[in-house]
Image 1 (tube, helix red, strand yellow):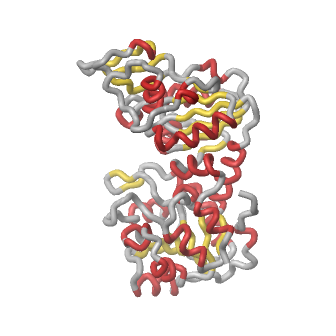
Image 2 (cartoon, rainbow, N blue to C red):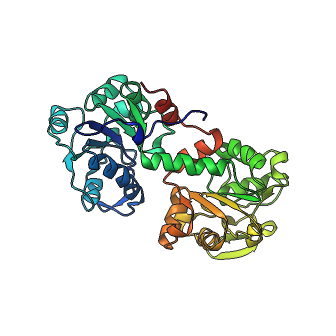
Image 3 (cartoon, rainbow, N blue to C red):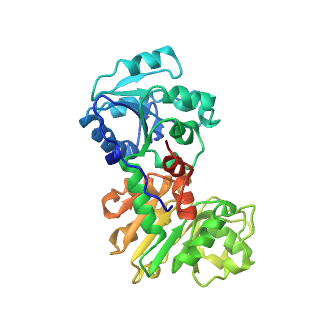
Length: 373
């Protein structure tokens, strides 16, 4: 990314201006309540910047993957911090009427964009109707900016467009992580080696040490001819040059689920045919002397209760003097559960977008802002 992104400070005057704010509203909801408002708290800084300068803010975003899911719980969560109106429809006369009724400094939240097929299809007519609500567009949803959706790449073709405060913080901090101070350590967890292979290749060149955990580690064990039992493995095959790369490290101790359902911690090369590797032990020795640590993805099957490796890694990183950047849903959940947010230099709101940006240095949402009218 060679060009400077247009930011909020570049907007000449916000007083009385309608601003369409693409916000990161896709937060976890249980029993009709938001259970983690991490993303919402971040974007409230952008909302405050706009409203304090007299802008009329129309917040748009999505929740979940299903068309029937509603942003009403998000409205309730936001209403604990700011005053905002709620429109339970999109693409209707009611939406236009409520947007037109806004006064300076007021906020309106619209219903889930993905309740309409036009969002994920990047339908130009859908983008045009949303764009007609405002005079300016602001993208503060870095976490969805790897998607070529109407609210990410369609609207910037139609309105003067700018990056929000959360968006800029993500670009700045993850940009630093792409050019780490050495010695550096990249910790990658999660699954699906085939989707992570380009990133691993990129970071084997950039980082001094790359620790692979999660189900991806199983692919490395398997490629090295080791028994992985009934563990989850990817479709892809790890190239020998990557398996034996001098910068690669894997868990030397793993937690397996035995045939009778019990757990056992053992050496990575002692796994039996009926066992499944579901967690790993991060070696503290990898942190010796490091100045930059980047972490994305759980060390084990976190959502299935095999969280000890992830928790232990978070605790170790919270005490290191290195510059630490972390991201990914389960990783953030572990950090929040432990109350460790403030011990890391930067906690990203993004998962897939973070990985895409780290690999490519840009995103469709970034390019859309750079090319905006």
